[in-house]
Length: 121
Image 1 (cartoon, one colour):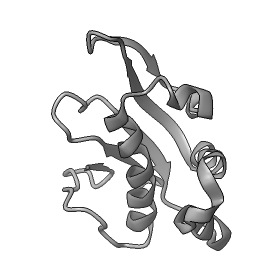
Image 2: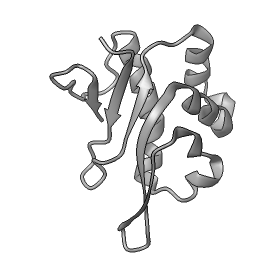
Image 3: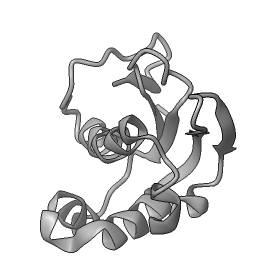
Image 4: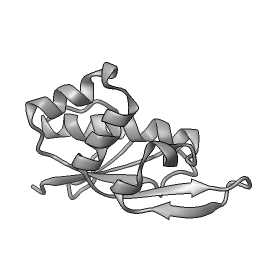
C-alpha cells in the first residue's frame, strides 16, 4: 500500500481538482485537523504538511481555468480568495477523508479505485 492517497473532486466540472495526502498521521496532527477552533491558517499549515501534490484549478469570470496550482505550498489564505467556492469546500473534506482512509475509515460514499490509492469525493 502506498504511503499516499489521492482524493479527487467528483463534482461535475471540477473533476480535475485533487490532492495527494499522506496516509500516516500523528495524534497532534489528527487533533489539529478535527479541531474547528484552530482556524483557516492552522488548517492551511496542516494542509501544506500533509499534502505532497495537488491539482487545484483557478477559474476566471467565464468559468474557464486560468491557472492550476500544483504546489501545496501555494495554497495560502490569499490564494483561497482566488478559488471557486466548490473547490474551497472540497479541500477541507478531502483532507479529512485522507485522514479517515489512514485509519481504515470511509467518511464519504466515495469509491476507491482498483489500485486502492485514489478516492473520489
